[in-house]
Length: 193
Image 1 (cartoon, rainbow, N blue to C red):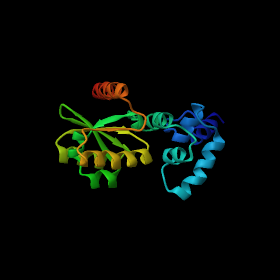
Image 2: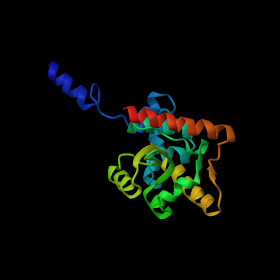
Image 3: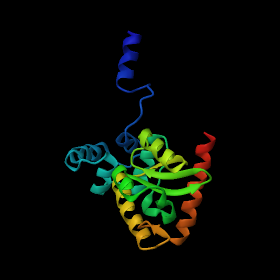
């Protein structure tokens, strides 16, 4: 009876190393209730977007909370693009059409690495191809797909206009320094792991 009980618990996800879904993380953190997740899942089928993008479009959770949940889910650092400032110089490493079609935005370079915002950091082939094409180690930062897609369009347009920086809607001059310091700190943490 003990082993049957153990098998049932593992099947249901208790006591297993199963990765929590973004919805489960948000409910556990008390950002949203189960009813909110169910409503978003119903909408997701119509919007054809990942759950975090659906929740963001529905206005049920803020970008920071969603990015934190995505970061926990994927096990990589996240980036709140709305609060970020990005040098448009990094955009030269990935052509705009590639960035748009693959939901990837170059954030910064350091040493022989390239930090990129991606919608799905589990796309190892994409990250490997970017590393090969740029000659730099690709360090992924997860972002909400809909905000990432908007940032890609706006950042590349800012570069086309000759602007040196793209600013997210909630970024400020003070936040720029903090944001860059935070990205560099996370990069150091990634190197040590």
